[in-house]
Amino acid sequence: MDYHKKVMKEVEMSKSLKDYIRHLLTEIPRLVDKNENISQSILDPLMPWSKNLPADCYSKRRK
Image (tube, rainbow, N blue to C red; front, side, top):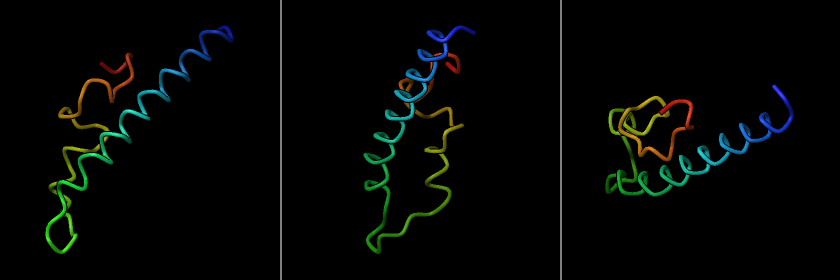
């Protein structure tokens, strides 16, 4: 793989990671209960392997 392709791959992955972290920071506050607890089952749809994430949270090669 030449240098340009490697750099572009890294840029794409960092953009996907940024979108995923933004999604987490938006959704997690909505999911906590009045005692500021959150259960594992509620977090499952937010895991990186979940099929419920918005498309921009995945790199193009995983879509």
